[in-house]
Image 1 (cartoon, rainbow, N blue to C red):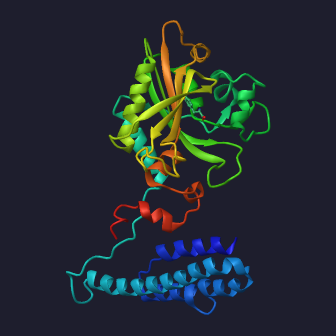
Image 2: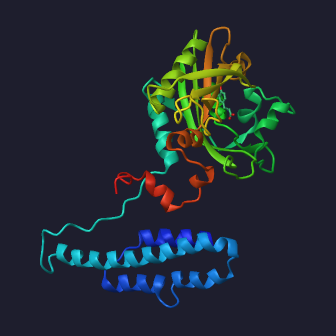
Amino acid sequence: MSLAERIAQLEAEVAQAQARTAEEAERFRVAMLGRNGAVTELFDAFKQVATEEKRALGQRMNQLKLQAQARWEELKSGLQEGVAATGQSGDLTAPALTEPSGGLHPITIVRQRIVEVFERIGFTVSQGPEVEDDHHNFTALNFPKDHPARDMQDTFFINGPGGLALRTHTSSVQVRVMEGQRPPIRTISPGRVYRNEAISARAHCMFHQVEALYVDKGVSFAELKGTLDYFARSIFGPEVGIRLRPSYFPFTEPSAEVDMSCTICGGAGCNVCKHSGWVEIMGCGMVDPAVLANCGIDPEEYSGFALGMGVERIAQLLYRVPDLRLYWENDVRFLRQFTPGALRS
Ligand code: DAH
């Protein structure tokens, strides 16, 4: 474990430390700040750190030490309140001990908001497996074997018979739903998806998508556009607009990328929208008749639209998250900002 990881681990331990008795509070102090305590040991390890890292790590370590001291004080004073609350001494009106409260991860918060927005217009939630077969992830969605479109979505393959892989998109769930239900179908599928990507500020080998699918008699592109507009304004506010750019997905025809007017500069141009005034938020299109037929739905009778978005992307635009890796690092300083009331304290 690197020193930075160890610091993050101890920060979490300090934030979550509890004590019911004076001995437990003392045990916390010894374990963290004692001569052989975890924080003290960090300072020994610090001597090995490369000079260019010293400044940033040193600052975090000093802060951690202060946090551990403050937590110890809190634990001790909490005990006195505890004694009071049990009636063993003094003031029965003293406030009760407070539990440090956890919170939802920003990806969960945004996923729930997206689901709510679609539920309001009659969509149900469907789920499917993350380890998916070739048929549901690719073939039924019109990616023939050896077709170059498969290169857009390289993933992790599972050895053995059956052609299993970690699904590259939640579009696999639209196939499962259409195979199992008759139209009208109005469903969304939130879930984890995987790609063979090196981890960076802008990419990760695992992320979250929400896909929506609507199949019925006479579903039109106008309904798709109305739904996109409703979605963008429900999540980002009434002032945003959308535009569609022609694009390609094997499973929709026609296909489009959806851009939204930049919420940061209001369309005037800034770094986030790369001075274009627009940011991309998802892909969409009319379900290709071949996909309907692959799933046993008559394309002469029915039509449909589909759309798919990355939850990390929507959360990034909502909360201005500068680096995707923040979502996975479990750094409480990032996560704490999303707990209820956090911005007030
Ligand atoms: N499955 C696409 C992807 O992961 C996203 C997508 C685009 C989903 C267009 C759709 C759609 O349903 O119509 O890149």
